[in-house]
Image (cartoon, rainbow, N blue to C red; front, side, top):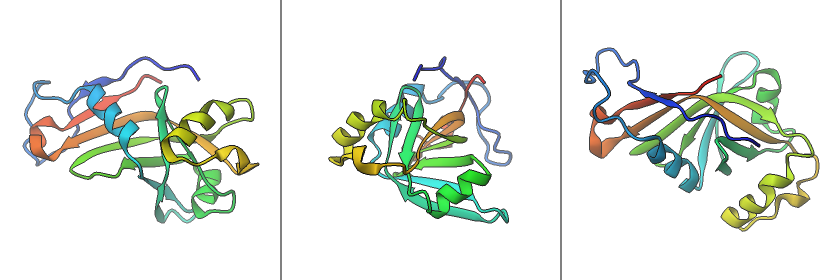
Length: 162
């Protein structure tokens, strides 16, 4: 699980919100990573086959530049991801929001053991008995950070190399 090159910080495209021009006040990537690591619960948004949205809570890990989570194979989110891997992950605290857009990819058998120990340490839950239930990796394409106390002047978008 190699870590990719760091993201480029930019302003989000939010017409009508009066965001300042330039890069002054942008949040550092470390701010987003701290929140991705510390969040206990995460929101995941997927799309059903008919295009209608589905939003659910998951446990997960931010590890080596990617987000990892598990799901039951017959869950709505797993079924949605099987037909459309695009998803959005959000941290639990909206006042310090980190929103990650990417594609979920199931881990293969060789990759799964690398997340078992960090997952157990974070949640006090042993995933080794999860059997064939899917574990996914979401590599970010774009991440947004919004810090309420800093106002919209700190609104940041991080773009990731492909």
